Image (cartoon, rainbow, N blue to C red):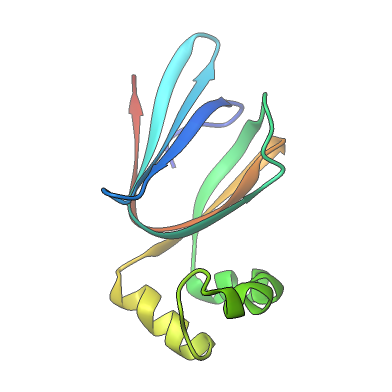
Length: 124
């Protein structure tokens, strides 16, 4: 991905009407936006002020299911990320939505993942 290493997350928001997730980030007075389009689901942990991005990378769905097995099992009966019978059905729904798996790792603070059709990083 375009260089966003060591950028601080200033704010983020999810628009459930357009299914867009937007991060506003900054490093040394350089401002960027990370925009995820057609978001299927996302999950973050350690949300806090001054979170710093280590990297954002696209991974395959096998990695998604391996790394999130417990989370998916724990949340399945609550209809998250969607209603589904088993992981095969969930995988099929993700693939039908053309979602890619993006892993956001942090140097400090907030990290997580996003399932979205695409992502764009723009200077702002």
